[in-house]
Image (cartoon, rainbow, N blue to C red; front, side, top):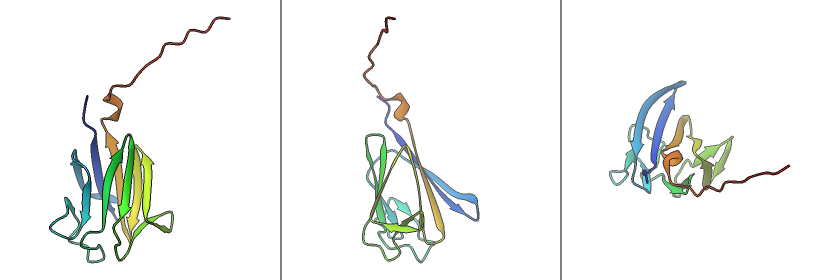
Length: 116
């Protein structure tokens, strides 16, 4: 079984400014040294802003009581979830998450024959 990989892209001014891939979860993100994914160049990001984990093929992002929150579609959310990919913002910083490798995981298949 292939371990899923999560690609994190930080987008600024419409272009990918930074890209990183992780295979170990959960991922803490923020400015602090205890974070796996550091955003220390952005003063509006909290020391430990949030966490990213997997639940099957779903990506789950949780705000860990940050100052500026996690925004989706103009609303601040405590927890967001997306199947295979997910986008959110921290003020003017856009983050795109995409899960790679889930298509290689073993799945149970059933053959169905239809008789007319």
